[in-house]
Length: 233
Image (cartoon, rainbow, N blue to C red; front, side, top):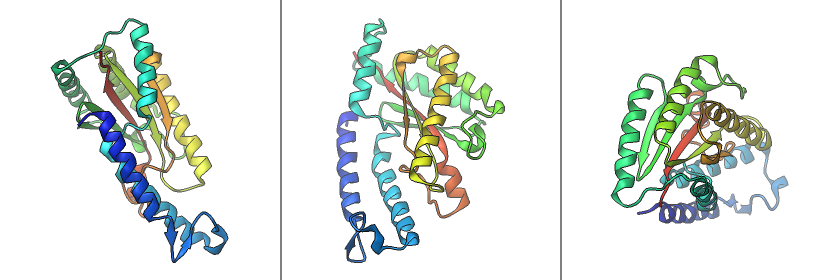
């Protein structure tokens, strides 16, 4: 199943999930929010986030969609970066995955492979301080290794996505996630990763990978994900 098909399936699952949680207690949430106490709205928000996160998990962290990926592909082709085709794609990503697993070993960064996409999950406890968008200095060597791998395997589009837990307002979390993604992308760019390869996106609190009801779950949700998508010819 290719990435476009996976995205379509994920969107369908997400739409169904959202439709299922649009009604609570017999009333329509969102159309008449004053009928619901704030605690119930918070519960509904968490449930919606969990459902959305489950839906998009099928595409291995890629959030920006086909349009943004295709724009980056055109930019790279215009810059003279060649694409991959056929069996070369899987082989290329196999080698890149091995290199990343070796270099990320013991760092706390999780390497996830799904299809031809590779996602690096970077928890905030090793990348940022609480409520911060400034990189922790001890994480510089890890990002240096990520940048070195990306420069070695240059035939990929790089999506950098920031995520938060559900503490705070939607607007604040959205802005924080965008700042964190921009910080990581800026660091990688400073280490030689071509700017035209990168897409930055903030997902705010909308893509949890764990329950926001516990501190451990909230810590897992505060993260940056870097997804590597092969450049196709």
